[in-house]
Length: 240
Image 1: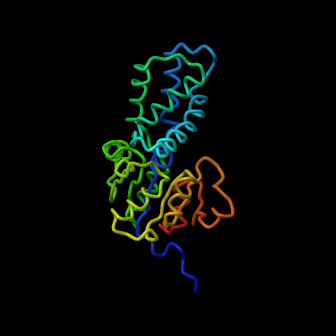
Image 2: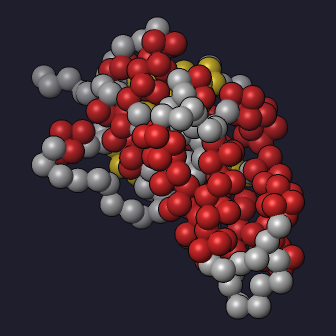
Image 3: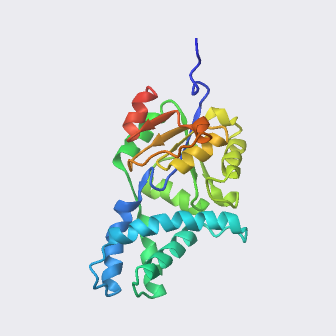
């Protein structure tokens, strides 16, 4: 009888930003307010800024990894990406306005289905936060926004690289004293699931945003074990 590829999994590591925490829902309203404060008269909406900003964030993280000038940190990269996006959209702003806006990151709200899912998954697995956020920031989010205790909170800051750098996943496995095959990464971003799979983890792609998984003949070796639309679907598949 063929063994399930996840039968050895004891621990689930979770991406937080965009998987557990609703970034767009939390940040677009403050972006609307920021645009008004900046005197925007071009009918530009917070959602328009978000679309560009979100893509630029990823570029900033990859550049941070590649330049090897020292790890900037999650919040610094997000601020830098926002400044770039506003300049690209020809929005005039002050740096004080940017700093005031960045306070919104302290009040991110979780997806309701993620909270339900974490509660169910906790019955069977150790739950670990594995995120690009700074350690103290992640601890704040766990306590005050997600409002649950995790088995462990692990930050890419400790490694000095952003996911999907393999060093982050290797660090987590070593820190948890587990073989990579005993861990399954749960993420709403295909790059994160793919990075974990390449590093020997199992993978669950929670495709909240209806986006394709990265595919090529090479990447087909590292497809997720599960692809779902939300956390309850994943819970059902895992029998919890």
